[in-house]
Image (tube, rainbow, N blue to C red; front, side):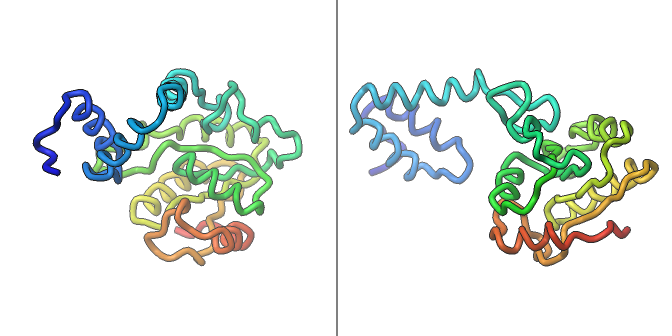
Length: 204
């Protein structure tokens, strides 16, 4: 079927919306839309409402910036977590990846990205000031820099080290069991777990 000619404007609009998502081509978008058309109205309504509620009602934790249903996420609310250790990650997906290893018992700080001049992302675009405030408070004894092993990740690590190195805190990085260029969310749980447990002092 040619995707330049749709029998319905409604169908075309729906395909265009699905195709706007990353990794979804127009053929895949068309298949997804046709699947929805085969479902009953209540199922499709439930699907649509879940997306709307996600966008309008989801919160970001006031402490670590993780996605949450409440002002403070379940991890930060958990009294069993080690509050002396903060693991700095790029994204919420990275929190999920590390949690899946069941090897880390500290808290997190989600930066919301990494420094990338080519993409127009600088330090002021990230949650770095709030991280420094945590460290400045004195209760944090170790900051783990758990960013992707890319040039942008290394640049961000160096910047954070310069910002936080003046405080009385140990700054560590994941063991280099991760291949250069790896992103945490795509790393297998065993490798990532070992990288966390065998972390090393940050070296410039």
